[in-house]
Length: 460
Image (cartoon, rainbow, N blue to C red; front, side):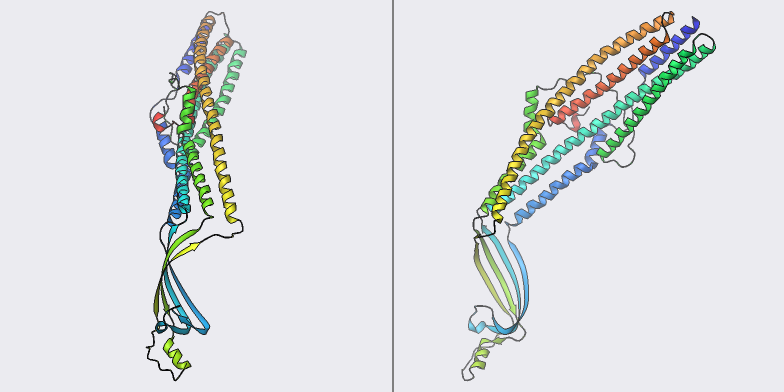
């Protein structure tokens, strides 16, 4: 009986150690620090921000067509016959030569095109706003993914801590059982049963370690962290359940009105509406104001009086011979009317209409996805909360059963199998409870994400 009492005492010691074990809290990277690092270094988030810059460049391009356009041009020509320049000038200013050099500064300014260019500019600006909202949504997703993987890693830490405590306790129990077997106070099969249970715990521990490493690797990828992550700061799973969420109808209304991806899709629709209207305006005339300053020159020009003198030697000519260079100024209005383009404008209109319809259908599909995401998140949160409540009762019941089995074992009215089974049930329920409590935190964040309310300040 004394040997059985010592065995029961050892079982009690290792159960207390396993129950109270847990990774210490203290230093390491906190959840908010991990999220802030991810927001600063995530490649996915940087890619979405780069898209905003690219579309901003398209706005600058579209706006440039509303600004004056100035071009410098130069030509050097040689012809068989002597050509006169400047064209259309009075005879005293005319020059003739087979070599002609021309330099010009041309100014063009859009006067009227029935708002086509303005609509294209408005479309480009809406695309920028769409990209900004999409980037904000990606930011929210990075916050959630980082927090989810962080909490998932802590859940693995909880399970590993419990498994290590159980492994240590089983080893102590195995040593004691072997001594009792050697003393003839226990049978060898009892030691074999403890060894079998210990091998199972070691196998589970290896699986948990592999899962934790995979979780850390995924967390580093989301964060954009190079190298090995620092130790994560351990915090126990919250024992209290979060406050009840808002009613489903209110969450759906909030999500459909304020989620950044919804706002992004609305801007895409406006952009495509402007683009479709601009494509229709392309069939109307365009009016441009133009002005040019042209500088002419040649090698050895012949003036008009000299030319007449050569042709009519007896004709008196008193006009002076002009120099090599001549400058001309031109100001006018240019009107262009599209007559035939082989169906190009028709194709642009059809493409713009199709793009607009696609964006409207995408908006509708997004609403359906939001309905599913919000309802799924609420169901996950309710399920996790229910599991927490049920497992709390299971832990209490398992503790009571283990206490009774220990008393029976000490009195010699039970065997070690029942004690081990009760101990296993208690630790299993405690591990499941910890997982369920972590699941509640993740489900609450998932609900915030689905309703567009997740942010660093709302993290646990």
